[in-house]
Image (cartoon, rainbow over all chains, first blue to last red; front, side, top):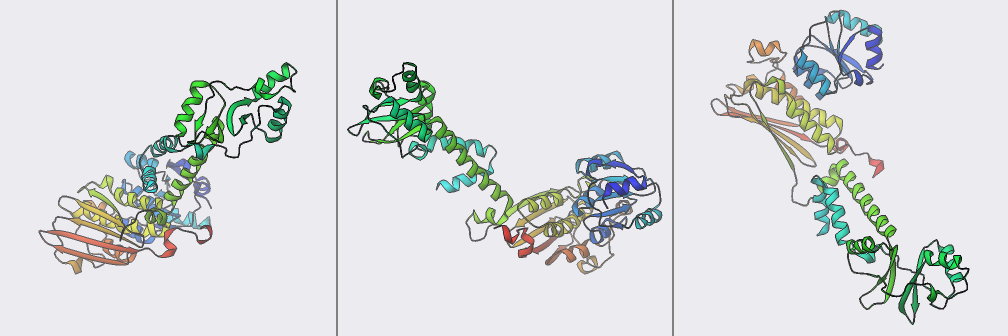
Length: 110
Length: 326
């Protein structure tokens, strides 16, 4: 399933990279420790996190993440949104906590 | 000799432009002209000229008498003859014979181009050093030759960009490597990952596989973040890219690690709470690096500095080459 379809079906808000949601999503990974993400997340994954500072964009683009999902509607600083836009990294916001966000993705077959 | 210059030409900006310039100045008329030229004698009729032009789709013919060039006759002259209904008239009555403008086989195309421009003529007979007719040249011949040379140039440049092997093969040495250097500022988290991203992009551009680029990027990112978090004055990242091996060195001038073995244990970190809040300091950096590298060595002395060296072997599958398109 494409990132765009997931975002539309779950009604998530797109904060950055709206033109780059055509990537096929191959799975997901959830963590807030960047080293864990570096070790565990794979290219094509959605990354569900509560971290919002600019470094999440660097990590996600190095890994080839298909979209960063910020859970619990956590406020995302403007410089993070700007960096995501620059690096063409989709950044979306889910209103639900990490646990429910993942549950919805599993229901969609991700 | 020219070959090496051409390769350098690809790399600088405006390389293509200077290459065109070089082509026009250095390419000789003999390379561009049509060598098997049709000729007619002055006594042939305008009708014979018409047949020749029609049959071979050409627009003009040199006129030869006793192996000497005596004139040139073109489609314009034929039109005049047609207007006057004089197709049976011999060519010498219509041909241009005085002030014949010719090109020399050994002169640069640039000179020929200038003469076309100044005189407005459409074609020039080409003579060798002894004044013997050896070919004919038109503006179209020059355009086609230049476009052909340009096409060749672009194809080569494209191949160079896409194939690391070609890139390295073009440079002869005992051991060729590409060295990239990045200065890392202490505490500048906003730029965290910039060097790693640039190294990853460089690798992909010279043809590394996405898997190899990713391996290098993850390990380099961890090293880069370590410098941002811990190094007194930031540090330096060096990427030494060779056809079979990539070495990344991250070094700083202090504070140094008191117990290297302890630092290598998963989960051990000396990062501050502020840094941990950003998601760093999980104590997994060196563990991640070890997992991504083929060889890793860490040297450190308190008060002196640290040096982390990471080596990645480039296996044939990781060059990004596909075997069937070579």
